[in-house]
Image (cartoon, rainbow, N blue to C red):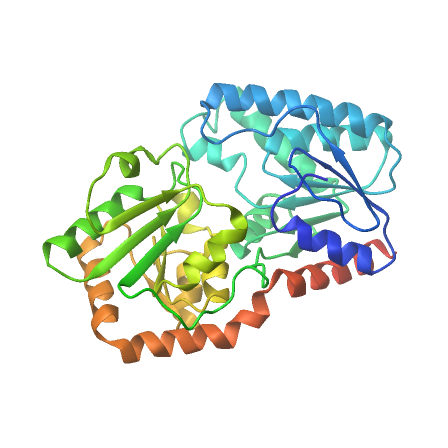
Length: 364
């Protein structure tokens, strides 16, 4: 089992049922769990700041390690999470060779990301091979959990079946909590991976416009990645780039802000995305602004906790920020609506629901 952040709560839910003895195979510095065995992988996980070639090489090497482990470890049921896509595929291949059932947890559009990024041609030989690999992973899985409705629809559309379940990311209710004490200056916050699908330049442009128009509005950005250079070199006075922050400290910084930002580029991946940060803003009771119009954007508008815009609709986005800055009654209404939702999306509750589905599906 590879450890993504939300997997910590899943492990707790699995152990609490007394149906499972859990062993975690991970690249992370994971603390011990009661009644859980932790096995560190030799090779590191792919780093999103590395080049595409190096990341692919890194992932394949780690995948070979996982493949060998699965061939020789004793297990009744294996659990893989993708990405990393190739690591999961090689682990699944070993499971099938051992004739061991497995569960696949999907958190992003792979191999679709390769096609959208123009790294691989969808209709080329390698592109068709990747699609066959994806189809096989879904087809032979005892259960496929998917993090968004878009991912679920995408999977079913290409690989019909009844072995799918929606397992949303949610947020850690111990880390992301509301806070009455806010920053003195009206603050918009962005946090998360600063990779190629994030509209980092849009954050800078918004901060510059607010500063030019003399609005007392502060922008803060937490995160790092391949698209963070513009933040490192920018000197806009009302834009503060905090870089990488310990995960346990992010919740407190977010909770002191007034609005949460999830600004992504205009593409298929972003339009069908539901970023984890959206759930975390809900946990901290922050109204949310999202680009582009997407599954997440539709959700925040439907639940009246925020607004969505096309990524290139700068003027509308900017004017909405000013409206929220000036209209604190509207801001408070959105905040109160977040409060009504936050218990529904805690990872603790979502993990428990998933494990109940797992037990029912596998008849354990």
